[in-house]
Image (cartoon, rainbow, N blue to C red; front, side):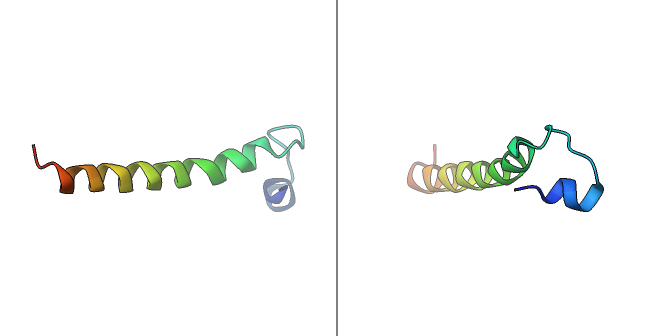
Length: 46
């Protein structure tokens, strides 16, 4: 996972791939949270 290095020509994480993994994981975590919140709201309208 080094697409930032290839696209922009610099390595904000020193080439380890942790920045790219974070950019991938945050939206996935956000979508999971929104799905959980929606299911919780639909089950318990309080």
